[in-house]
Length: 192
Length: 230
Image (cartoon, rainbow over all chains, first blue to last red):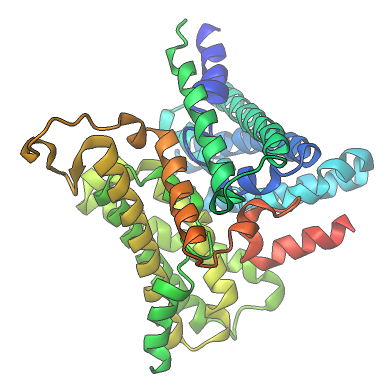
């Protein structure tokens, strides 16, 4: 039980997927312009990453590994994630239009988000079982959401500041991310 | 300048994928801890890019337009798997240093972006030259970032420790080989290019409302998303 909690917290805070492992940087920098969009993207990522970790873990344990096909994992995982995103999109469109409206436009983008593939591959590398993989996927996605929502609120403040011209735009956003990353390094001292 | 040489110039200087187009930020930030890691990642990506451009250009009249993105992903993923196995077999040190970022070459926007923007419209010869140019541009940018971080963060260059030869005592700034240093170095690069007036696509990197910055070049999924949003 303790190790399961540790996996989740480790994914969300200690090894934060964006600030520590640099996965999903593009959407982290691109979408964080607006608070509302950041929160919606975070929701969509939590949804997709949890399901993708579960499916990838099942596929690896019951199909790829028994047949000695583990070298195929990159190809299989990327295709599964792409297909999964399509299915989730169609399902949401039909069953719950309200959720689709708020998350929908972000779903196709998640296919190219390297964080989802990264988590699926890390789970396999760490040798997590099904439950551990799902929790790791969920924890990582919560970490992504936390980071992007925090950056969005920082950006809403620096927008009004009088910055030196060369620092405007991407540089100041990256410096903010660096400071966030320093703050998150503090979590590595988290002991249980 | 002939068309083939022009592709190299275009990839390295005019449309440098990392410094000007701002593509493939994840590997740039993640593996630039030392100059050698930067070279290793750059060359691996270049190998995949040259081969994928070649194969996609050969198949450009065979692959139906509607399913081209999944087809490209399968081609790229196969090439990445081959590269990964080769690195694991012949360069185990590099394999360990780059870790998960080798299979993640699949989702590097430079590769799908070049397939979509160049390889599927041009002849195999030109597509290969484009791959070499873009790959070189990426390798140079990664090596520069890695070199700067290594010099500042651990006081060495390409693994050669020069601190002991300095006449005075200097303590390396450890934060530069930690994750925050990656953000700082890239911020510095963009700020310098802004200051000397080189136009980069940094707006696309940080201002792409509601749309993944990556798909700025891998155009299709993004346009579809924007259409549906309206």
